[in-house]
Image (cartoon, one colour):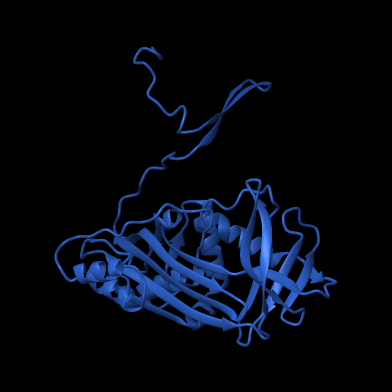
Length: 325
């Protein structure tokens, strides 16, 4: 346990509220839908409602609707997902101790005892069907040549699949393991902007997995970079997800966070992830807030349109008092 984690774990036993500092997101991003769904299932179980089907989940944005759609299609599978452990409690300290004892950061801050904290963790180690060989990946970054540690997998373990009829993904790699897991990955175009949050990431993954693909001609194997990813982050896009229960009470999911670690080398991959959220009972609906850059159009009649792209860094500012009189 690191010194930081030890200090935070010890403090959860005191009466002092201590908020975990979240680092700024880098270009990399993660979201695990299995633990998030199992946390909601734990809420249903502990509250006496039995199953996820008993909850009526209401999406407030596109990402939440995508997530709810995934849950609805996998009602039967979610309780059977392997390597997952869930917990629910009205005590934020108990939940933090559970997370820390399993090697994760304490993701909860103090919440009302009338609310319920829910969390779920997954720990999964996968080994490739055949170990790879070490190599190096070279690419140009900012005009300079950079080297990254990599490994090569044979065609028996990593199969190249060609994707037809998609303007985003052209190839998909399918990696087999010694267990039941299969790992898929596909490169985005060099000039393509990455996902902004877990909702966009989930949408990209569903597109990649659902694409029509066929076995490509590949005799030289596949070279992949080694990965060491460790991120604690807010899951803002899941906040305010509506939960209506059979007893007629309306609830809201809030304060969603996750801690994800993913490592990959020539032997296999390891995934460790924790999801945490707070179910707030009887919460009043919140107004929709415009809090990021946006496009605005002023339409006059049917032919004249003025379109503006408005960014907080350069124009979100209060105009003079007499500007609009």
